[in-house]
Length: 78
Image 1 (cartoon, one colour):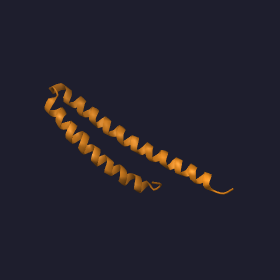
Image 2: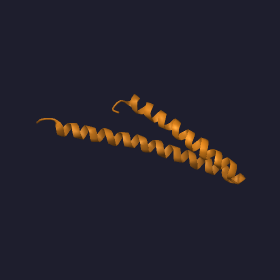
Image 3: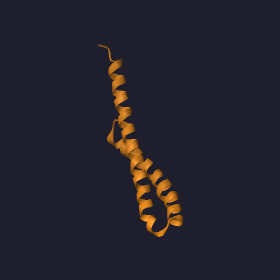
Image 4: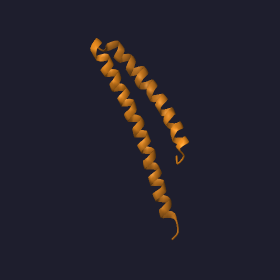
């Protein structure tokens, strides 16, 4: 996960899956059940949820990298 390309590929796969889940499934329910004035706000909320999930993935990648670097530093002989 140290390579930016690896992170971006994983993030792209996660974004595609969550976009289908959130925008496709939940967005379809919003369109079908929401009152006329609330549709845009609910779709915007779903989009914000998608962005928050992707930011969460990115920060988790960073935490994993920091932990791996810290563990490697501890394993090095002095």
